[in-house]
Length: 284
Ligand code: 3HC
Image 1 (cartoon, protein in one colour):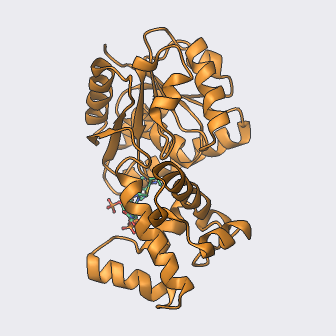
Image 2: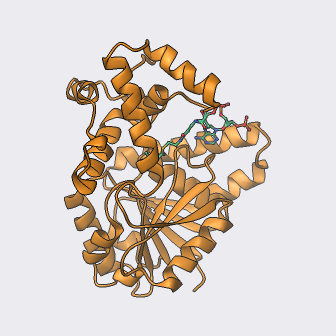
Image 3: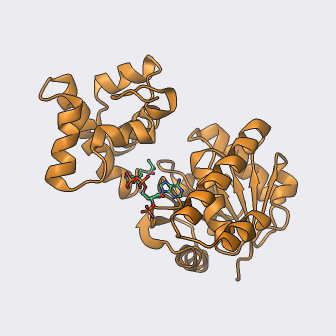
């Protein structure tokens, strides 16, 4: 199967980054979101991020113009996926929402279309079970900022076919990404390894082991991480980190994944990180 036309469902940070990358690599791309102001904002973000790439000489001005020509935006999921070869879902991490979205995709996308999810924590096997095509459901887990980060976790659900896996691995390659094959277990590899590190950094804050700035400095200067774990947690969103830790804790049943009480307290207070202007650090 050759993928030429893609639809991305969800115009948040991940969805607009995913649409950006597909359009830039020659795919006819439709970005779908019921929230029209969010769609407008996504268009502006993509335009700005493409401009940033032109200014950095990463792409030519004509590449930017071609990418924008290949992009369309709609609040209507049914028409947006009607001719898609591949759909990538990037809506918030709520099971009921994923079930509803995948029900709609299964009904309106062509029978042969592949339905991929960018989920960071919900089982691909479970998402597949919400459709009549579990063999064509697969995980395509991108990383923020999507135009920069070159990893895609390509996640095989219990019933994902080899043919489906091969198509998304080839597409990820074509996007200039490095696909890594991952089996369907909670948090896959990325978040299973990353989130306990972030959680432990938050325990260090709570226990007064060191100041947040200093904890991050240990990891940037000592381990060469581009961002310290607390800066990264603020970048990802503390609510997202808490949700992923809860999934790891519930589904793997091991207390080593218990979310730090300070993380819960910050989320309850609405201090969610960069997106709310305050998390472990303050933002303009
Ligand atoms: N679009 C296009 N280009 C972008 C961009 C965007 N949204 N954001 C940054 N860039 C480009 C910049 O133009 C710059 O390009 P250059 O190298 O050609 O000059 C380059 O990326 C670096 O950006 P900056 O100079 O602005 O800043 P930094 O050097 O501090 O890099 C960063 C920013 C790439 C975000 C870096 O700090 C980093 O790699 N941080 C770690 C990010 C990370 O770990 N992400 C994974 C999060 S986990 C996740 O997403 C999974 C989920 O399930 C939780």
